[in-house]
Image (cartoon, rainbow, N blue to C red):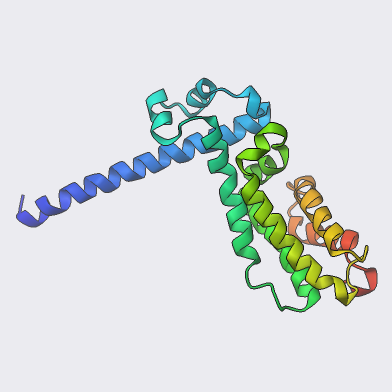
Length: 202
């Protein structure tokens, strides 16, 4: 083996290990999401996660200290992605802002519907685990929808109420249409119909 090959070997091995560890972590998160949706956060133990993900307990604890870290690692990126997707909507025409907000939830759903479902099912004492991220997303959503209020576009006339409705119903509407190939069209038509004045709809 020449010196160049020897020099590259440790890096290649490190990359292979990193990839394997990344796949293990993602498998733990995916199986945890499935279990949390099926049984609720309180009904799922670390043992159940380890068994479902088919990993050793030591592998679990290499990535997560406990279940709290698992659920936070599942849900926090959804809020961060949603906030990032809302950037650039400021200053657009009111109708584009509203459609942009609706499409944020659609994009999050298409990326990972189970994770988005989990964000609305987690509540009670466990909500504290990701309340900060949720608060920032809701604040950004509310700011955008409030900016539309003066245009008269909103069916109920209130940016605050409309933002609350979006946060409450968007995922449920997407879930209803989840198996329909027309999901994008039906979801957008439903959200517009519920929240935008009829004469202002495209």
